[in-house]
Image (cartoon, rainbow, N blue to C red; front, side, top):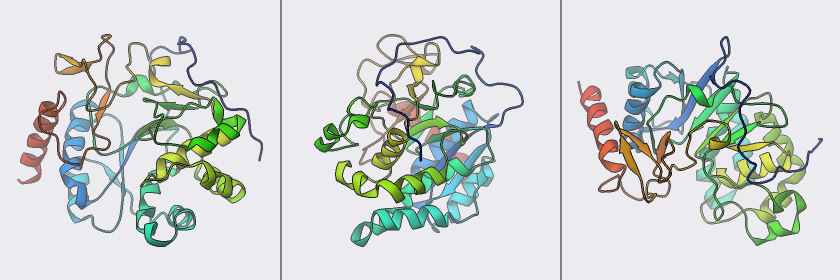
Length: 299
């Protein structure tokens, strides 16, 4: 396996080759993972998708077999429900996380996004609502320059202090894996299997513990393989890197959020939230999406 050096963490903004974003004839889409246990999150996401991105195909990967309501929601909103059981992903997860934590293996099912019939895919965690059309995000990938797009850095929830021992990790951009855009031209499921076959011991040495499973893995494989990782605002004009539900200084203009610098927030992520949205700055809009979705779902 040939590995390129890791990219610098914050590259300067640069103009994309095609400022219009998505290119004609390319297959672009969005992927999520869900089940009935998180139907209270899934429905607001689907409603926000319907209001902002219904022109893009949506693929719903089942987290497990608890999907009676999830199937109905997918049908209601026109999402493609993935029937195929991701045996290779589940097998990889069982090998990486054996024993009492094996029940969390399905957190790696987000990797099935890499096997979809798309030229580029945007994976999004389901505890998210979308505020803007994702079309400008697509068509930005470029070999050795922009191969993997992320929205937000994550400095605390990826590796432990041993990462300093490895040059390819020292200057790597650590990211939140609740959102990413890539193509299987640059990253495939087989790359995860191959990298863990060769470097599982190293991965376990440097990965952060504490109920973290997919995020350290996605970071490690992209860093080990030397993918060119780029922040969203460095390839989409006026896009913000912000998405955290407790971000300070957020304002709304015509129903869409802006960060303190006036940059456009594309989505909000309730990562780490232990309860449903209540009184935060993004929570009122989440409740509107939720109310609309439940009204449709209960008909």
